[in-house]
Amino acid sequence: MGTYTITVLAGDGIGPEVTEQALQVLNAVGSRFGHSFTFHQRLVGVAAIEAEGEAISAETLALCQQSDAILFGAVGGLPRYDGSFKVKPEQALFKLRKGLQLFANLRPVKAFEALLGASPIKAEIVQGTDMLVVRELTAGLYYGHLEPPVPGKPSEIRETEHGIEAIDTLLYTENEIERILRVAFEAARDRKKKVTSVDKANVLSSSVLWRKVANRVAQEYPDVTFEHLLVDACAMHLIRKPTSFDVIVTENLFGDILTDEASVLAGSMGMLPSASLGTRETAYGRFGLYEPIHGSAPDIAGQGKANPIASILSAALLLRYSLGLKDEAAAIESAVEQVIEAGYRTEDLREEGAQIVNTQEMGRYIVDTLTQVRA
Ligand code: IPM
Ligand code: MN
Image (cartoon, rainbow, N blue to C red):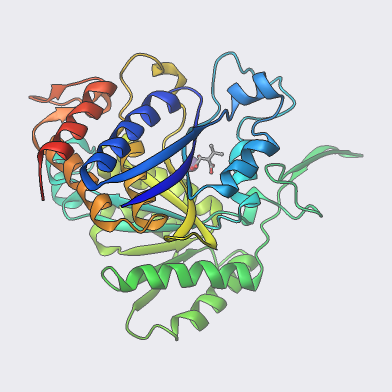
């Protein structure tokens, strides 16, 4: 029994409609297990720029900080946002990530048995895929080395005598590398005990340092198998032999790119949740931000086509990591699996024989499964 406070930032495009389903699922968990959730819904992204002049207001950020966790939808990409705003909607994400020091982005990629046919990769290759990508989230190319760092303003464009040039800086400190490697090794201990550190050490200095620190941290985890992989080779192995991976740990931009690629293994980006964690402890676990890895998909917004599962599974991660509610998280994951196994699919997973349902119906089936089944 507990009472928990969650700040909900649904954002733009399909953000609100998928987040709404995650809230329904959380309420269902609340009634089944006897918890109550207080949701503080606030504006973020284009909606916040239009109403409050900022991608996320200082007041909303403060509210986030006082909550047990944040459930985030998606920002940006709306047609009416043509880039002419001085403020980019994505800045909300950078302010949250950097401002709340959420440096560890966990992106689990699991291929459901019933969705093997939904991936463009052959079923026999995808079968058994179950990996966790640990993406560093508060440094690297996304932040450059402006002093003081300006979140979301990593690059500099300037005019020189030779014309216009632009720079981005890939900066990592030893401490930033060490703490993300530790997250990966700790996670591996609860999984298949293997860590693959991904870098570009044949070219980049930051990767040479990354490798050196990784080797040092690895010595503290002799029970975990450890390997290095260059990022280009990793991109290939991900779709050639995805089952060879357990935990992948990597730099911010590499992790961004590799997780979009890896999402293809799960059949759709609409299936993949994420957790962004720092070091701050809450009364029940670790403070964090939870969001689908997909974006705002403005082309399908408001049509009931969006898959709410990534948001619903993000809510499950929220329960597990920030609220310490492991059984409740597992109950959501199991309900999602059952509904998928029963053949229900949103548009993104359309295939022969599938029963196509809309965003709300998918949410409702998961809620019904959760409330009917007594584990
Ligand atoms: C993600 C997204 C963001 C990122 C964008 C929206 C800035 O692609 O969370 O993966 O690049 O980090
Ligand atoms: Mn991305």
